[in-house]
Image 1: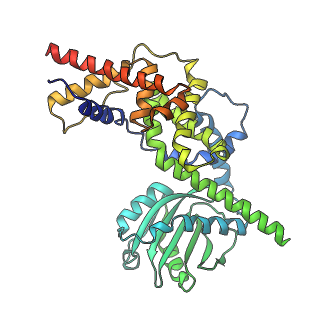
Image 2: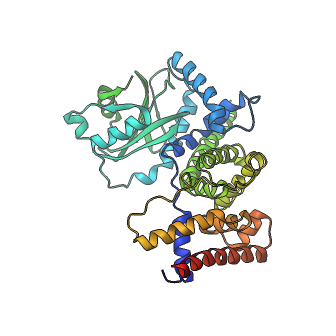
Image 3: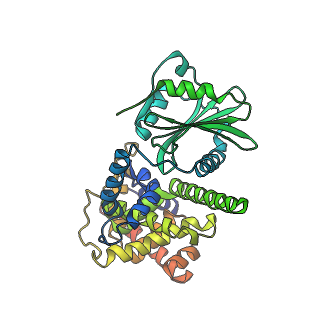
Length: 213
Length: 182
């Protein structure tokens, strides 16, 4: 081997020091930190020198079980939920222009991973023109955000695996209008331009959505 | 009534915005934070715990982050302080590094010579004293300048630059020494 120069050394350092790859589930754990922090606040007396995850998992698990027993989350105030949904959709607006097409198979793989649910294969679901399928933190739950091509523009479908609404409601601002609908296993939100017939997407998704439990 | 509703909506929107800013922070920086934790602790399970502690602390102190531009340095500083608070006192710098635990991932695209050189450098970085390894990690992983590293480590710029220079010289000497033996 020859002696290495400064550029080669910098290149090697860059490759080696950036080599560690985070565990696959680390990002998801970090996204749950706000919820875990709330849970941890309830258990302030627990050991302070243990890891966040080990310290809060028992609390989170108990909370999760209680929430499941209570048929998932308590409903949120409607205004709070609507504000959070609109803020989320505006924050994700940059994805509206995406020209990606996500297949039903790919979308289902992402849904299974994020919320343990999928859409049945059918001509109607196969025909959905999906640009985005990503997990997101919404209504204190890891949820799924789909962006579809609608009749008048992009349509956001938000699948929240928690009962955060106790009744169906419609809402709107100057630009968007949408529906929040309690469904078996969670809550379905469909939001599009004010002229968009969102009900047809609501019905289509609701008819084909299957939870894994 | 209307005023109260407006005030409530403002609070709700700001909570949602806060959570979204936090999520953006995780997505943008968690990989670099984890890498820095790996080089700080030289132990991957500990690095994972430390990364979680860092983001937990960041979430609790989120209101103290005044600008997104300073978010990266803010997170790296939290990590170093959390490491000092939680681990350094109970777990002094290890003499024996678990080399399997911190092994360099396979790089199939490298020639055998290059792979050997990479492995050698990897071990050499792990064996650097913290006073050299930490500024080097901040520079290489975080992309921070000497002044920024100085602010984070509470050192003056000259000291940082000297340590970075010496760190590289130590590594180069190890590599060159090995090359001469070949």
